[in-house]
Length: 232
Ligand SMILES: Nc1ncnc2c1ncn2[C@@H]1O[C@H](COP(=O)(O)OP(=O)(O)O)[C@@H](O)[C@H]1O
Ligand SMILES: [Mg+2]
Image (cartoon, rainbow, N blue to C red):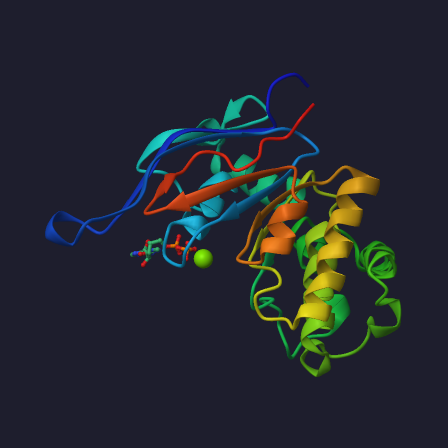
């Protein structure tokens, strides 16, 4: 593929209407190449999560466009968009978003269940993802009993179980202590290195942002100059 994997042009997002309208994004443009590791940094409330949601097709812009692999997400049918989000993208959130009452297996298998995979095949694929993250022995445990770092590794296993091209992570280390955060970060960069998974990471952690091939800083819904741009 030539051209960027993800391209944002003039993204605007307004929440609310009339007097209460609030412009969370005021014209954001950026490119992400396949294999890039991209950090989105900035103060709380600056629009980082909003930007990530638009890039990942979880929300639609008020104006502007996101292209994925050269095609506007707005041109995808609802079922095509579901397929892209479920099989080409993986997601990791600050507070894990696990079903704590369900098993690790059920949590990690969720994207496979949605895709209609048979139970036997699901278990094999989940085991493979868990092994990748050093959690294979936890497969039948209840997610709720795990530590924070283990929960985030389960969330990461769920994000990669469908072998996505892109993992979007919104403050993935925000709820973890420093050492545990480092473990999760190392695993993410390892996935980039060994499997070529493109990473888009919203973060407050400087050390995490510094490791990325490019950083975008967002203040009041607009990008400031790129802090560092990936070199070819
Ligand atoms: N669904 C929503 N409805 C109204 N306002 C929202 C909504 N989502 C985000 N906002 C507002 O948009 C701004 C940016 O939010 P967000 O992207 O979550 O910031 P960040 O992730 O950088 O902390 C904030 O002021 C937030 O209150
Ligand atoms: Mg946020």
